[in-house]
Length: 367
Image (cartoon, rainbow, N blue to C red; front, side):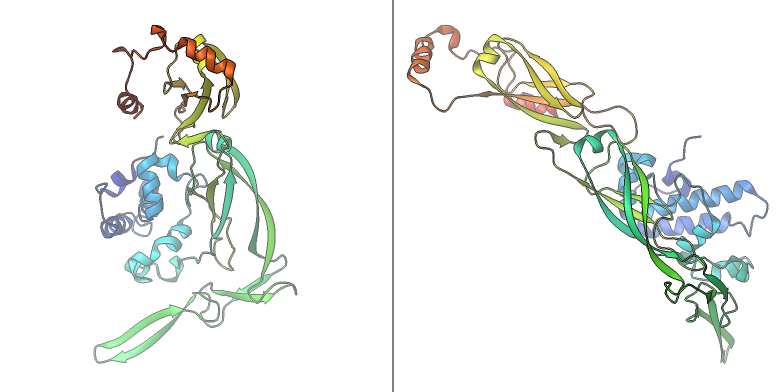
């Protein structure tokens, strides 16, 4: 089943402000919270759907990609592909409900304690024009914090596993209870019981891992992809994400222009006057093209489907070939005499007809 539009899910306009997005998500989350709708799969699904929409629209970079490319532009996000996890949702977005008050609103208490999340990792991935155009599978070598083998944990004695310590203050209005992150376990509710000597105080080691990633065709320079759960691990929590920033390696002869590829073809006057068959480079290798006799300098030839794959998966762009007639800078005596003999030939005098397009027309047609 096709995904619903994120703006439609939160019932907001496309130009909604960050505050309006936050307010709309809070309203949806309270309405469909699992504690308020026990044993109601439909409510739980709407709760997850709202969380996914907020996760994208509350992030300016992801929102821009979503507005431009739709759901395909934000694939690989925190919740795409791998399914939704209720603890992930509370961990990611619980702060917009004002801390533990959200759980207590429904009587959830400590049972709904939000899970902490490890830090994200960011890497740059250089790709060629061909890899950007068609998509590619890459393997990335990453050093990340992981829980060491053999580490065991026990419940934190300071917070008794809640991850929070509470302080009661007597006031003239009665007792006021405030909660803060437990300093002993940093909010995880657990402390290290046993660990190997190479692990740090939190039971973590730095381990190198090779992670495969599928890059979709159509991604561009500075675009960011995300692999959920491939960042740093954290005791008693969920791993962070791996953020992959795309960096385009400039091609020597081809220039990217959106989903199209542009190539400047330089030919001699003889080639365009008599016609010629030439080879030109494309993303997928060389192809032969035909220049008709009388081809004018500035003509744009189009190779259908030889451009960049569209990010949403539908179709490909074209390759545009700009024909440039090369004028020799120096002539020998024989060449000069041959051309001088043609100078007064009426056939060599410029005589553009109505069918010949001006540079203005060509630019207008191109765009």
